[in-house]
Image 1 (cartoon, rainbow, N blue to C red):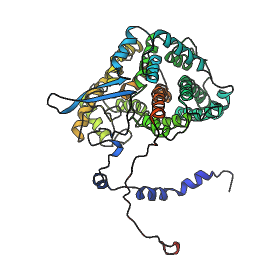
Image 2: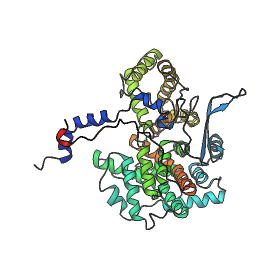
Image 3: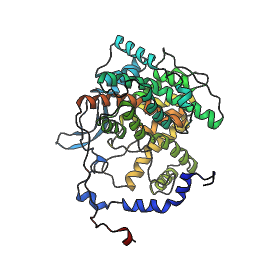
Image 4: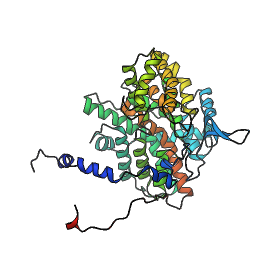
Length: 457
């Protein structure tokens, strides 16, 4: 075989027909799902999730029983360890301090920390914000990646080799491993991004060490920016994003993945790497990147001052004739919430000051206009079983953009935050487990006889 021939590329040329065969052989008739009472996506027709486990980590409320005993949609509420998220946010904002570390402590230990406990916890995280000797050179710089989620997954799995007790799943050891990863995720992601820019875009390679006196949000901005500078408002809003993304029930895809993989008794690094793989998907953590790209596409094709122009183009998106032809208006709708996503409501209330500081009020107004028009267009076009409203992805991408954070880091920042929730859920699964999670799949293939090779067509 000539040296120029890449075996994988050679096979790729011949695989198209096989791909069609594979696709056709796995298409299941729609009527089978109803016949077998199969809850696709583990949700019923109203979007209500199938109960597969119990959790004390967080609670999502999207509907309530009214005075007549009928369950109806309500404005979304999110509780961390039984405490309303709105109250948590108001608490640390009012006291003018950062909230992510406090929320991480709450998720891990089930209670709000005292001042001394929070100081000690911050000190432990600060001590863990360091990479093994040579890790940056040998792992992150050795083979740069264009995708920072890939960098995170690869780095997490490689850290297994640096852990003398990697397979010890005692709660004490798992807690240490999880706190270590919570502390290291910002470094792994931001350093991976700088290496990517250096090797692929010929950018300067500037590596800032984290400052032990700074919060997670401050360190992310410090490590990301060449001059290490940021405004108090910027750090405050990034910290808020971390708080809002830290946890969202046991049923979201990546956290459920964490539970499923942890139930097998595997190590922390494998469980977290699996959750990262889930979060990378555009239907989950990658959705805010899709929102940004979609909004850029919409602005390029509409008159921003004309509601009719916007409505027409949104209809084209729904008809799979515009943007990525998926038929989805990203950032609109949620698997659980209908009237409102509480995280989006909180974010929205803080965006305008940052938009003003950055001189981007016009872009903020355009987002508000899409937020108003899109649900109306979706309701008119699609058969709806519950309401549609803007979700957190609709506004988190805008905040990251206002902060000057590159799109390559949007999903990794989500991961930095959600690592707190994953950690709490992993410990919860190991503490209450004992059974490997194994849901049922009904087989619907028709039986057929075996045919000898010489007689096959």
